[in-house]
Length: 123
Image (tube, rainbow, N blue to C red; front, side, top):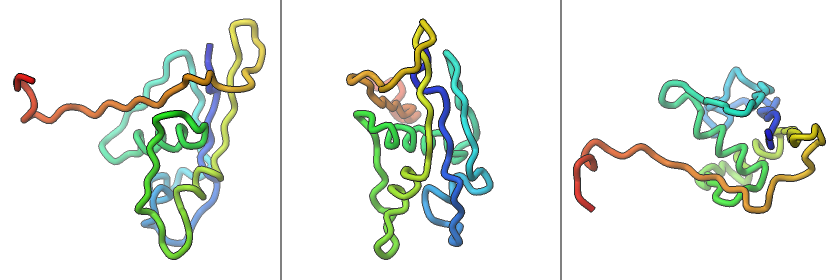
C-alpha cells in the first residue's frame, strides 16, 4: 500500500534567493516527486532531502513534524507559505481504492547520524 502517491513542490518563485525553504528548491519550482513501495532519497549534504521530508510532514500534518521558526522576514511566514503552496495526492489501498486520509497514528520519525566522537562510547 502506498499512502502518499506524489508530492509537488511550490510552483511559486520569490525574488530573494536566500529565503528558506524557497532557496533550497531554487530551480526546482513545481517539481513533483512520485513514490513507490520503497522510495530512496539521496543526494549531497544540503541538497534538500531533510527539507523535503519536513515539508511533506508539515503539509500532511503528521505527528512529529519539524517546523522551522526562524524564517520570518517582516510579517511573512515563508515556511508556512511554502507548505500551503505545495500539493500532494494520496495513494491506493490493496484493492485499488483511493486512500482518503492517512492513518491517525502516522508519524514523522527522523534519525540523525551519530557523530564520530560518539562512536565507541558507553552509555
